[in-house]
Image 1 (tube, rainbow, N blue to C red):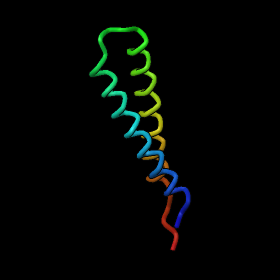
Image 2 (image 1 turned 30 degrees about the horizontal axis):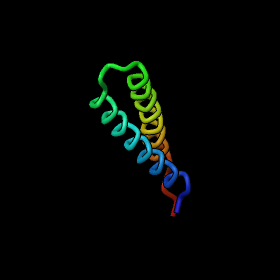
Image 3 (image 1 turned 180 degrees about the vertical axis):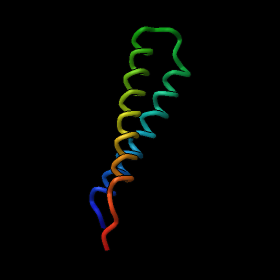
Image 4 (image 1 turned 45 degrees about the vertical axis):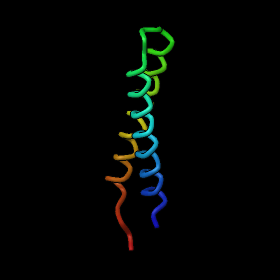
Length: 64
């Protein structure tokens, strides 16, 4: 079991969750500055987690 690959999978799942939550916030936004700011923050964090998780899974080599 490679700990880097597990951590990459966890980061990827957290990133997907953050992007889904940001989409839900964006869909329910009525134009408030606070809610738009929250949606942008969650989408940026979700995107960073998703990209770093995918990158960690792709670059980690399987060792038997």
